[in-house]
Image 1: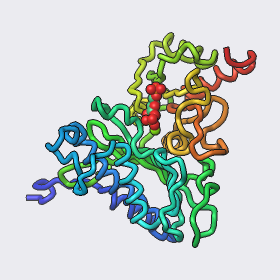
Image 2: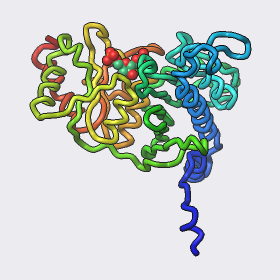
Image 3: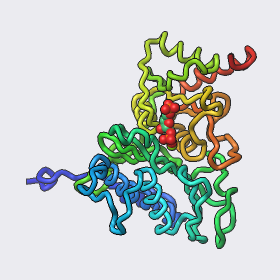
Image 4: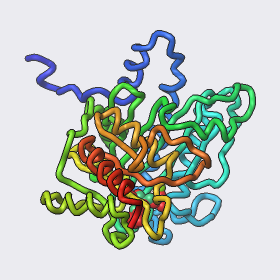
Length: 339
Ligand code: AHM
Ligand code: MG
């Protein structure tokens, strides 16, 4: 009997996939590959901790106190610690920009060539109610010389300079999706083997779609262009889908086609989402998948960042829908600005 029929192959692991991709570049040193593996390792640990999130609230039952007798910290803080530790131990990253830390973090790896911007646990207000959450990351090559600490200039590069970006979605299953600028691939975590396996090769976002994702609770303060675009979506019988967890909303629209919008609103006049570790990584991924991302007027990846934690409006997803939203905003501008 054919042995292949007795035991089906399990598929391509993330590690093997990363190694194969590295072989495509004869001068690659393997440092970026190592960095991606470090992120995947931290993601597995965070996944384990998220899966116990209901249990660790039960005092004593599942180790609410650590060995030093300290109280368990909130999961977003734990995720931050896990990713920072993995990147520090990996040695390839000199500086980290994290949503959880006001200042940039020096890993002490002064020879490290890379910078990571990360939102360790996005949508963390959803943890308590068992809704999908995610990690978003972006990787840059440092511009300052090695041999000393990284600088804020290393962290303030436009999105076009990203060498890799990705996200992890902790959902019905856990997935890691990433790009190194040569298409987008998705990997699903197999918990019993402790491995991510290639499950979504060469992801392409549909050119159009019939899903719009925006927090319509803020509709009173939408600009005229945003309001007109949303009306068009309704007139065209689109479905409204808004989880309130960026990675989950983005991931669904990436696979099914649609548009995610977080515009300027009264409560968040400059938009809510952060350019460096929310908008830019997802913009890189969506473009690599054939989609589009903009702040309504300008391609997200071309925004020149001024501060590490700056925010921007975002319109992201299927390219035709984002282009239509931009057209409505251009009309609004021509008509004299926001209402
Ligand atoms: P966070 O970084 O504090 O978790 O906030 C980001 C989250 C996104 O995941 C989500 O898309 C958005 O905030 C939802 O905001 P709102 O509740 O204003 O619609
Ligand atoms: Mg966030």
